[in-house]
Length: 235
Length: 226
Image (cartoon, rainbow over all chains, first blue to last red; front, side, top):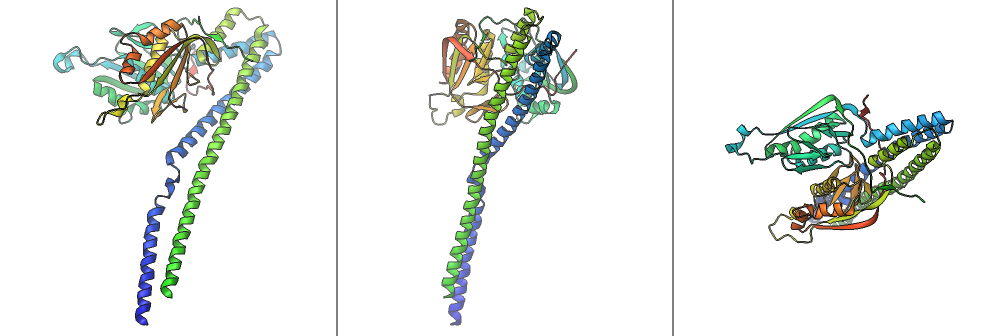
């Protein structure tokens, strides 16, 4: 009698133990019900949408105010128009801007320090500038210029022999890229480990990134000509 | 007796644990579902706001049309709007379709070589700009001066978190012949990408439409300099 009780208790304990152990193993996988990344992705998307909507609401308020003003008379109307014009020009890159940001200097290594003194060693290409600019845009840069050529929506950065064409203007090394935005974010986006500064340095390019309190970026000075694009007819 | 009782207890316990686990999982799925409905709703709201902004701009245009303003100034605003990406445009141009490689890499080969990268998209865009494109969009997203193109896994992200999946259709307004030949020229971008099997097709179009930027524009740091 005594013996069978002991055996039972042992058995129960063993089964319970096994189950508990099994249970612990599965609970550790519970959170994988939904891949973590998707939830996070949606949350980020939601935050961006909130930001977009706030900006659009501001735009609605601004336009409504101008519209109301424009209804009051001719001089008010032209005032409203001018203020709208300067706002759109600011977005388009047709106005010089200033603000905090970063200044990046890219230069080829001096010939003497090149291994073997070879002149065919790496020189900065259009792709390198494109990458830096793309990274700055991703980090929220609001205005960017390369050697004082303002980067607008239609700006090309294109290798043409030994120099690079930006806004149909020839530029050559050293390249100075200036960007306005959150200086810390801009700087760290480039200097992050495994980031562009590391990549470009490995190629043999001298890269210097400097955060600045005040950067002046000139307006786009080329002529804007649209021979093909026409406003779409609504309705 | 005791043993059977214990066994039942054990099974019940285990079952109970499993049920709670299921509940947790369902909660987590439910949360994502909620979030995704919210995001969808917000997108609709955003589009509605965007439409309102477009209407207001048009109203402002007509309200100021009759004033003492010169046609040069109106022209200046029109051009600035095109460059700022806040007006919908049509015109002749090209449609460039990019897709991942149709070559399957041999074992031991780097499969990354056969996948479309953000640099590839950047290069194509840059080439089109150099060929005089006046307005560009990718999968309906207008390209602005501040538009970044980033690879994240199999998708690309641009205009701050607008996610696009392949195939990427780049629509550009400009001279169709110049645009086409800039991409297709010997040793050009299309040839370089096709080497890796990346699918590039360029179609000349008599008329394409490039939408306006969907979203708010606001500069927090850059202020107009006087």
